[in-house]
Image (tube, rainbow, N blue to C red):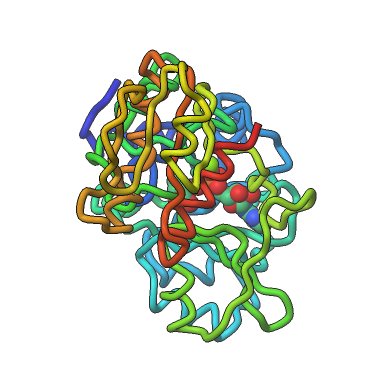
Length: 317
Ligand code: TXA
Ligand code: MG
């Protein structure tokens, strides 16, 4: 059931239930971090491997010390700069943070979502929310309540409706090794914005076999329709002549009769707008009667890097 009733959402969560909930990045599948049953339900419903830990969502950066410890000055500066907002930090966890949300690791991933509905929900409950993106493991993340309802409507009591997600791709994840911050997942905060706060930062290649953020497996965010990433749309269309093709393009595209369905991410070539439209466009293409999705590579700068990262994973077989 899709609903705007925040009180009811708080009641369900307080009694150990799980719900779909809106954030500025993507919708999450949320439960009380202290409820072993709620967390088990999240993993089961998502079919997510238990080795892949969850992000803890706080109502305020002021609560950071209640979940994490040994917090570096750089981490505090990043929190001050980006919270509430789409930055997740991996920090040493407090001893009372249950192993069932951190997959037994000594660290915990934390963020404060910047969404009025999420924040008012978090203010009504007295525990943080664990929330992975509300999609079955490996598939396209949800950016509307309807996406979540389509995936899990028959398995969860409620999807709290907060409208379409404003950012549209997941939070950027930063961890710390020694004294140095490292980007583990590209996301809604660009590298350029982070570097403006804490100086040059290393970005890890998430496609390695043993990624620091274990969820960052090469294949992720995938539609069930085959997707290829193209540097040259015209050439790719010729190569796949005869197929029913859907095109995901950044801005405009020349007229080609083989394009059955066209999704333009931003007519005005704005990367933030493109990010906010990305997953909904992928969902629509995946529901169209086509053989192949050809996605155009975006400019590899700012949020374009994060979008290209998601497209690369969607294209991995
Ligand atoms: O924007 C977002 O971050 C959304 C919204 C709902 O907040 N959440 C999200 O969660 O994308 P999820 O579970 O789909 O991705 C969380 C990522 C995974 O790649 C996981 O491996 C990583 O965070 N992660 C969580 N805890 C970690 C830890 N202690 N150390 C390293 N990586 C961690
Ligand atoms: Mg996810």
